Amino acid sequence: MMDLKANRVIDLQLVQSNEVGNSQRMEKEGLVRSIAALEEAGVQIKNIVTDRHPQIQKFLWEEKPAIQHFYDVWHVAKGNFSRMRVTMQEGITTLTLLPKKPQHHLTKFL
Image 1: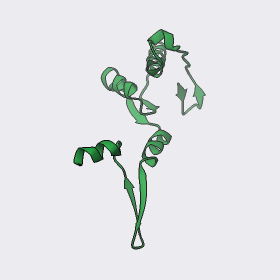
Image 2: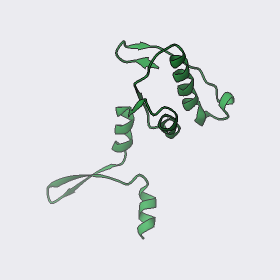
Image 3: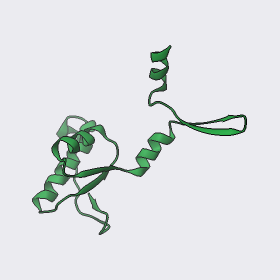
Image 4: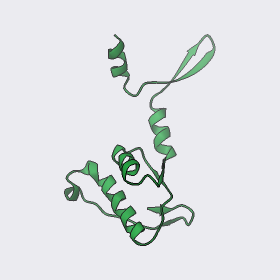
């Protein structure tokens, strides 16, 4: 965890995959431990910035609704940029955001 105002790392958790069953659960467990350690130390967390990890989203939504959750701009841009398509028609440039799973989208309507 990093305090962006102070520009300092305030907590670091090491989680091994064998502790939580598999590597998919490590990120959420690290966040859970960090939040618990900071709250135990009397730190009030108002905002948190993470990637778009679904387990983290669910945890914050269900267990920590008082913490305002934001997404890391880089991860959002990376996810959207890979789905963008630029098309040229008669001198007009169009930027289109493709569906998340184009193959699913196409098979659904064909």
